[in-house]
Image 1 (cartoon, rainbow, N blue to C red):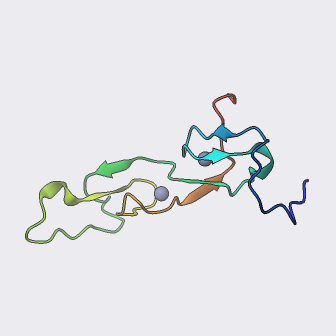
Image 2: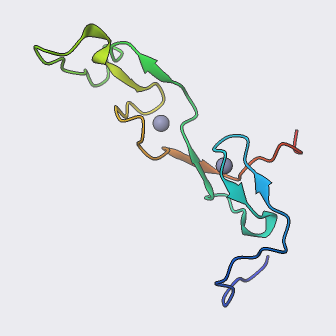
Amino acid sequence: MEKESERQQEQEQEDKKVCKRCHQNYTPSSNTPSSCRFHPSFFVCRRHDDQKRYYELGPNDPPYAAKFYDCCGAEDPEASGCTTALHVSYDDD
Ligand SMILES: [Zn+2]
Ligand SMILES: [Zn+2]
């Protein structure tokens, strides 16, 4: 229940942790349930499931061009996560 109204500068003195899910640095006090964006599933290399969207291969696309996140169907590996949660430190278990 911390308010961070005026704290704009980096908090160098605070313990920085590394999230084992997204590998970003974070401080425990700035860790909120929306801090960590990630895909709960893997980036896969296959066609979309029949009921879902279907990646249209172009004539020059190799067959393995159908790559997407299994969780949300995003076809860009750089697509920002479809799920948010608290960062998870390597200390947590
Ligand atoms: Zn996703
Ligand atoms: Zn994270």
